[in-house]
Length: 410
Image 1: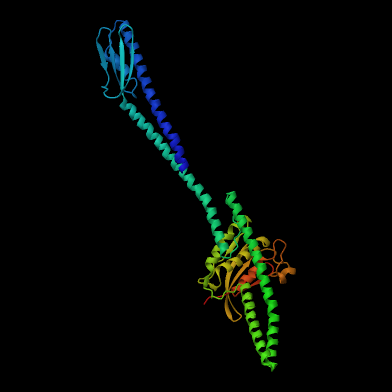
Image 2: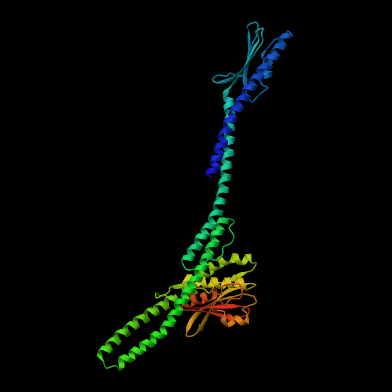
């Protein structure tokens, strides 16, 4: 908008000045031409012996209505003939004469010239206002076109900070923004893979340490129970306390590796999570010419889980369906009563070829993939759901349907 206003000022002001100067020159030229025409008519009338009167002068005075003017003819005998409106104040004057004393003076008031100048200024101002309005509209559209991808990028970066891995956004038309978005997605996936490896290492190390620590604890208890030496019993008791503290550290490490938070989860509305996933994944499915159907959950459906881990697990399942599945991908919610509790089940299925028979029993193992992937997505999704107190299962192998079981909120 500032550029448009500057352009209008740089072009409009000189245009106004040039228009005013041009109209002033046109007025002077018109007045001078009329003076020459009156002189020629008066000379011709005098040459034929006729009289120069107001009727003759009126013919030339009324010939140009844009610049009304008065005409004064000074005859060689010293008399004068005058016609036209009185012109007082500032005026434009045209003069013509002959050697024998015939002189013509045409005077046009500047008021008419100023009115024409005002019309020109109003016209230029109107055009300038139209240009500013059009430029503002184009500027707003362009600003929104540039701002919308940046807002979406900021939202994706915020979701990454909350533990969700953003999906590849649709092309925005701005090459630099698309490059940043793709780099963000790549970095998020690499970070997710590294965290998964570290988490698995911590879990494996905790499991491997727990067994020898348990055996050592039992051995120390046996020594404490059988020894009759006070010094040996005291040392065994101190060693047993140290082993118990170390076992607590291992248990805490294992809990952190499984992302089990000590604070209770607040009830989570499923409708908001499903709506967010539908809005995020629908463009990707449309680009693949596939349909994503997310059935609305039952009214008031709530689970005991975190929004970030659940959204990330659903994103893994939707991406898995988009890459490996086919046809319509459908997400639906149902209730289930089993294993001594109330569960809410989220099912993600499609119409594709399904999971190969040789991978059905190992689909949640790390580095097991159908050919296009790292094999880390489904294991990570299972760990995320397990950390929320639920479980992820392959409900149907062909066509593939995955079921996420979550505790129903009271």
